[in-house]
Amino acid sequence: MGEPTRRILLAEDDRFLRKAAETADLILLDLIMPKLQGFEVLRALKADAATAATPVIILSNLGQDSDVKQAMEAGAAGYFVKANLSLQALVKQVGEMLGGTG
Image (cartoon, rainbow, N blue to C red; front, side, top):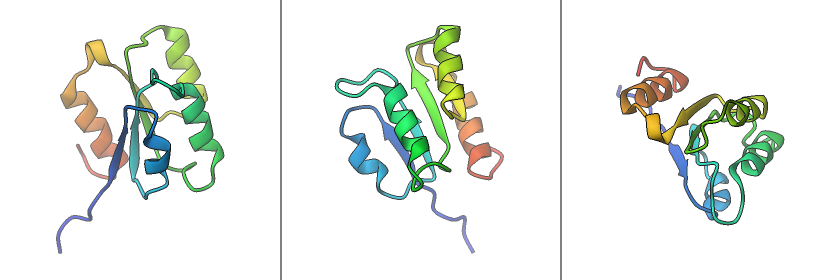
């Protein structure tokens, strides 16, 4: 049998809340979006029983320690600053969260 199909939701704009209702195994969330800030979205995802257990990894240009701390306290499973983004590290963390080795 093959590997199970995994769905990752990449949230990069204000329309993603509709997409979050679809079944996703992991969410990649930007904090700076046109209409709804990512911190609000993260808190809403963690407050909703349908998405509370879904891991959320932050991909953001906000790199201050206070931003990272706020996201992690709100329930983020990981945090990557886009300017310093290592795709290899991101792939590894996503793989680990989805039950693989990355």
